[in-house]
Length: 320
Image (cartoon, rainbow, N blue to C red; front, top):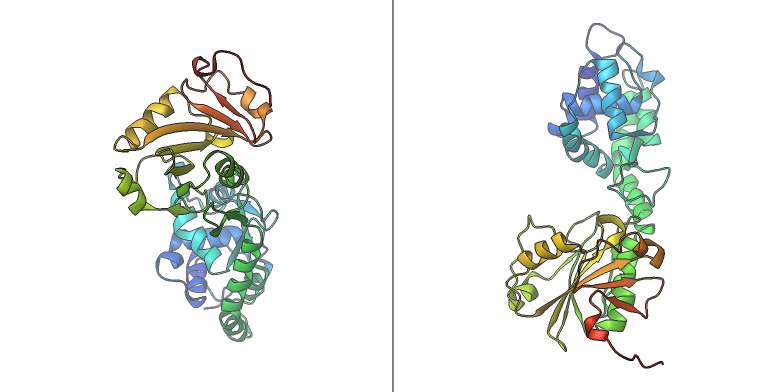
């Protein structure tokens, strides 16, 4: 089964290689084999000893496969490649995700991959006498590689403390630093004693999800509905506060307010809508979009809120 012994196509070689690494049928089919060949930089007919580990985004992998193996994966298959092949390769420590910037959000359009250096050395021996020994050592070491990779990713996660004192982490980057401020700064100031019932995270949509507590308030969540980034219940005021991290998805505009009102229509608690921004400069870009009867909060001025109405506060305002 040497790559030098005959007409066996490069794709078949890659499928067999993935099987010997311990991958299941879905991760050693022709799609996964082509992805592996792209990440190894191996064109048809090239010897495995020439394998490299270029850094590639999903769209670049698809383009490489099209250019060198004439397999034209359509744009709507990108998610299949990412979820059904790349994610499993990452979990097995066969490839690394974002080695150039471990703090990059996992759902970033700039997210990229490359073959793990240890796996690359094994690939370069494919078909050679020492391959069996190299692959056995790799398989034996894989649990340690996976643990090291998991530890490296954990180092870049964002620690968050809920109002209850319970700690958890969010995936790095993106809007999650703002969500951390929303939980630790906004809630402490404006919702003391509040219960965090939902926290969204790009890396895991339901980072915190207190479904039973929401049901008690009368809310049944449609798993297909677009949740706000943070949901907090205030027992003292009987409010259900719906907060959006506006840095990524925009503020609570009139359309979003209507969507949220429908999603939380069963709530027995009063609904409060808050658009959260990292800074006043960011908020200024969205002033014309923010819906009336909602609130705005900026993490760089955490002690102040802006109410988008004006009538409630019409009249003299006492100085501090």
